[in-house]
Length: 329
Image (cartoon, rainbow, N blue to C red; front, side, top):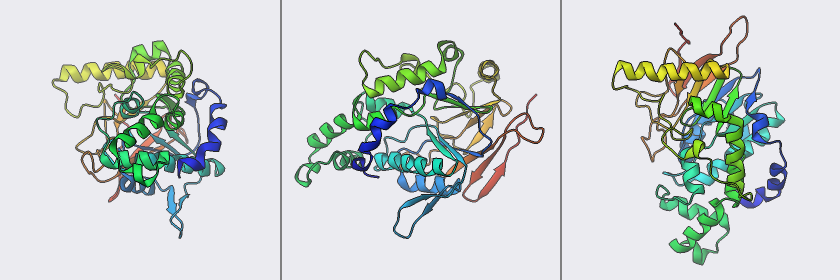
């Protein structure tokens, strides 16, 4: 979807209910969570097809075929790949179609979204700069000039810019049923500050609202929501470290009345996996060709039903699905 096709929708989006009033949701629908995509359109399409929500028309247009399925993408659409904005607009287009079918698409902001809003473009590919020039509408004689590309990207992604305003509708943290979603992870001090408050502050900053500042607890430190790796280590240094991380996680989930957390941010060499007795699911598999070029994987979350008090989660791989029941001590 070209940016020009979406201009008319931005004013409508800014009038929506604040994210703080949509941070804690419930659904009876199937949920599919997708990890970091980093500008790789081919892997994005693969993940969406694996989720069973994307079809392609004869003319090449994306079509939602997921019915009332809910998609949650946990951030880092940007950087390391050449089709970042195209991926963002694909998700936004599918969201419109999904809502018409009773489904939905929720996007989270990752640390790479925040880096770009801050003007930190160190991970942007040459193709990413070219895409920015095209989306900004630069004429052909300027589109190949790096200085012009850089100015175009700054204009698009600076707070208040058109792409920044679209990213302002994405979450820092989201809870659906008994599952909490965050790019890096949620710590106790984030709950004390308020997840809804973090969502609103990030949105206001990205929209460039007067006096809005970048929310430090969301994105400004190693233990912020977008940068946290407390729960995503594939191998802890010691059992003590693992027990400490799992204890913190248990406290967070108890305070949020949740059973599990889903995070991205840290590529998992063994693919999507769970830890801490199923209390955390790590779904960044490094699928982008700019990261590990791993095969696409997603997780499916079926809501509590039929006497089950917690959701049922399984990993869906391109070679089939692997069921991993939640086990708790």
